[in-house]
Length: 261
Ligand code: URA
Image (cartoon, rainbow, N blue to C red; front, top):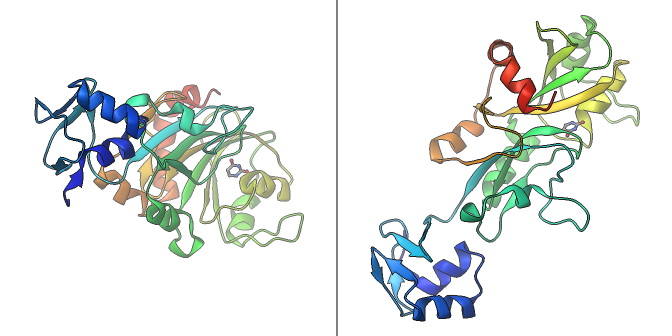
């Protein structure tokens, strides 16, 4: 990575203002490779040097990728006057400026959401052109009917006339009307409206995978973990619905506990 000014690096990656950063530098609270640095204009290589501010390690690299298990009632937005947002779930030490949720889940939905500052990656993940599959564990109000799979596959038409791309739905061999749904696009309330179009109703929706990256079953609701490059690349790949279904059935108790079901 190119060299960057120390004060800019800290301003981009910490919640501190430029004037706070000057004070911290003067107070000897900023260490580069273990040595206090007071010069705000000092140039550093964030990939090769270790920077600490007030004892905390400040991570280098331009982009950050965080995987969250969104609880019910938390909004997929950067700020909201009345509700907690997914950004509020990011622990202080992982916060940097410019984080936003790549995609959205309804307020009453739970599960996997990526928070990043990488707009290009978000675009690739969300654009229907890239066909990144998203998998949802859903609990239906009524039993799964065998004709749902063909109806989803043929491209459902929603109540407002909107046409959906072919999607997949498969029942789960566990008690409680659970199914796994795979979408290749993201229309408003899409899974709920597709369930309504086949005469059923979604009681609970939990996103379990984006592309080939699966939500770790042990990540609790409200939990957040940092992803590294290989995980991010996996997110742009595909994932077979039937393989994922077997995995979810195997780990079902962890998934349902972590979905609050
Ligand atoms: N489809 C829905 O209906 N809701 C979500 O939160 C995500 C997909």
